[in-house]
Image 1 (tube, rainbow, N blue to C red):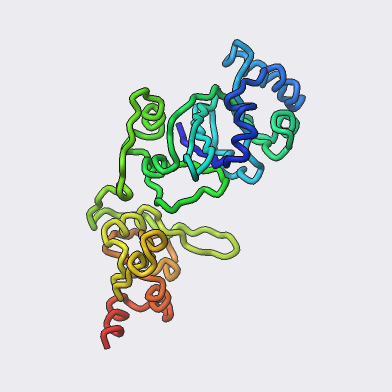
Image 2: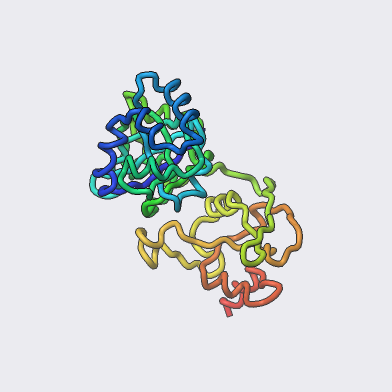
Length: 297
């Protein structure tokens, strides 16, 4: 099981939730407005799963293609009504079927627009969840804003619930309780634990992608104060903007390596943006201790 969420927004939720989330749609209408080559398959599957002939439906924009194509049967989608005000996340959609192609005619029939062509089918389960609580549950920073997009939650963010399925079970419990997390729940690693780094990718140019777990664990171990000049973003810019921000620097920069190699926490440090730029002003990059010594002069 995977967990996804869609930031629908108040306007869209008020307009469309009553139609297809908290209102049932006839399977016969779905089949009628489906592509000819899928009609028989959709009818057979939906009627087997929903023998009463009714189900709930949701669709997401074509722009969410890269994320929504990871969606599969038995995954769960949470629908966010608003991240402001009451911060409501009222609907849990346990996906039963999702055909990974654009169902334009069905989108137009259901929501009056072809703008939501990636359509999936389920029975809505109502939940009581707020945006603030959800961010705490999945260990997102307080300032994170989803900006109307569709996201997949990485499984490791839900390990403290026993994974996505454990979290879904938690949300559906009648005695659902809320929990407060002050920060990311990060497993402490020893310097000897190695991380594979340096996977080469090509977009417009070749670059090395950092191992995100190494970066995350480095911040957890070293904190958010520059290890060279002791700059503190939170103290200077305030908690709302600056808290939790720092950059991670590899003492043997990835850009100067030709092959995948292994790193430990001892190979990285946390630095402010200015010091990070100064470290890379030379090639090879300055050693952090040498830049720190320059500041002392």
